[in-house]
Length: 216
Image (cartoon, rainbow, N blue to C red; front, side, top):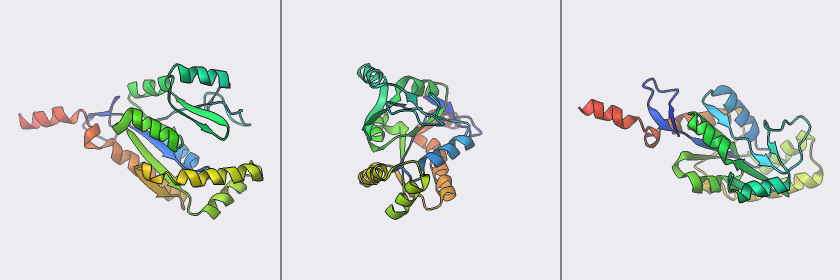
């Protein structure tokens, strides 16, 4: 879980960051995640496994690992997930092995998961986890964005809005809470959080040796 900090000219070793982004559907989390990955060479995306059907334009292994229910249950039984949850009659989970490989390679890992997954990941990895929750500016605006997609029926949108209210109720289990009323500003705030978390003293495992040299 050690890495050289790309923004640190001294090259101190540090612990990797498990960076969680959560939000109700339609609040802009996925857009911010894509921008973050495109702007940061030291960050890799954790690709979840899911039992939901693949959608047009999606790629297996890129957007999700698409598996059937039997395979998902097998993976859960074998403790192959860092976290998993039921969402809209489907199951989503974070495969353990790829995340461990990315951390071993010195990369931070970005997670696009809900509050249940964020809680499970925090219970497992504790201080290595940074949790960011993104709020819509209003519920009216959230519904407008969902309808603007043109991909969901009225019934599905109603379910997403009901779920959004439940997700927002867990805002206080996150380390940071942002309101996405301007996508670019919200993205810059998320990027600032990631950069600051990388520099936390508790993650700078190589700092101790440097301090000892200064004191010798």
